[in-house]
Image 1: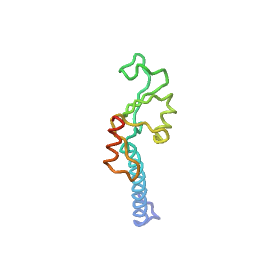
Image 2: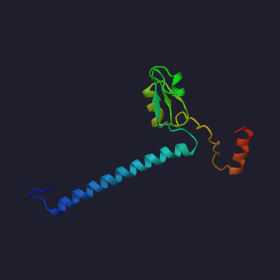
Image 3: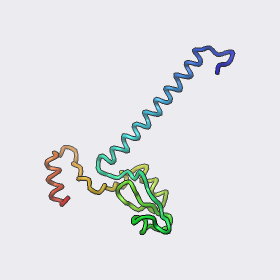
Image 4: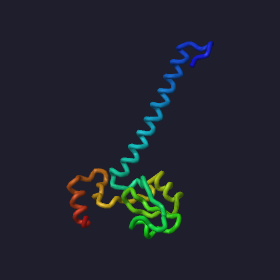
Length: 125
């Protein structure tokens, strides 16, 4: 909608500004998703989903939960003391990394794949 004192160039400028805002927002969301997926690619849980206490428990994992606790359902099964604890881990999963079950140990920078596989076999994985 244009007002009497606006020109079509004012409207186009607004449209282009909105598109730029959307592009910047999408780029930020993609960068966040890349970080999120990199955690899992390194073999650690990003705690993307959790289930809370329920009485009676609806599955085996929730049998051990106490009121207020949550259990990670994204792969690691870690138990969180409360919502705040889960959100803290969700915001920075590498602050206290939880390895994903079944993931091979990831090599330190510069290690070869062969030495990593040998170390994993030696560790009994």
